[in-house]
Length: 141
Image 1: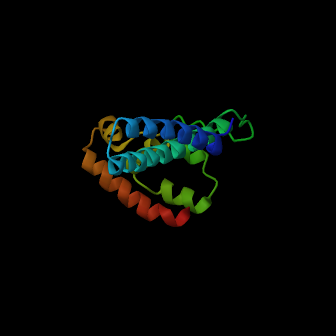
Image 2: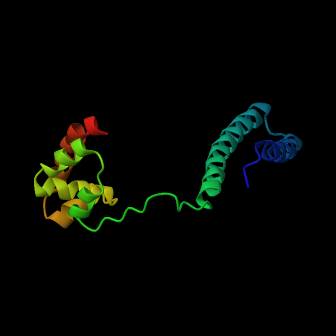
Image 3: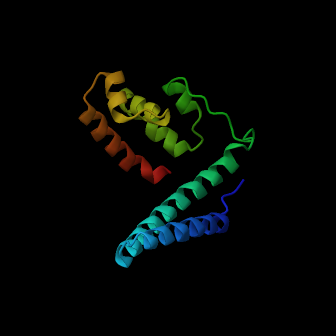
């Protein structure tokens, strides 16, 4: 179900008007009430953006994505077997084993510190290699 902005805005307005009425009855200064109104409106808009995106994601997350090709990578060779672009394949195949493993682990979703511990090298080495690999491989994508 999609996020209904107008419905939420009406509910917020009713709540805010009731709150402001109570504040005025208690003798709170009008400037303070306006500052609270502005702050609450900002929070409402931030929440609105969050809930709107969340609702859009729920719409897509319930869909069946069987039409997507199944990509299961078990090792570097499986990764190379799944590359269709010949120029990209040649470029990656020509790299050293460490660089190929870094690409493989990045595709699998590992972060640089995790890759560093898996490969037994420093985090800065992984970051440097990944930066250079991205720079060189961008022209193929």
